Image (cartoon, helix red, strand yellow):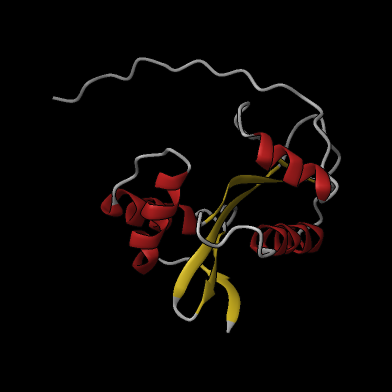
Length: 147
């Protein structure tokens, strides 16, 4: 049976492995802590698509109010489908889930960013009705060292 369900800290091993497939090195303990923290905000739901107890896809969302928009926006902050499970409709189902949640929350749009070199991901987003409309800029900051 395939289901989309809320992610819990007990899913940290699967979350860590899926994030690793995107190139993000997040340990199991870090994943568990991030899931706990995000669950407390009320604006950052995380979901897994699971089949027969195996996590096949991960999606994290953020509902944000922005000064320039009339209504909130649902931002997809993570979307990843396990490499062995791609092209089975998992990403599409997760994105449809995000769209339903966004509509229920009164959001005016769903948006996401995707790394420049992920051409297959970009083609996927276009195929389900998303359009490129901006370019994101990023600057890493020096973080103070503890201790």
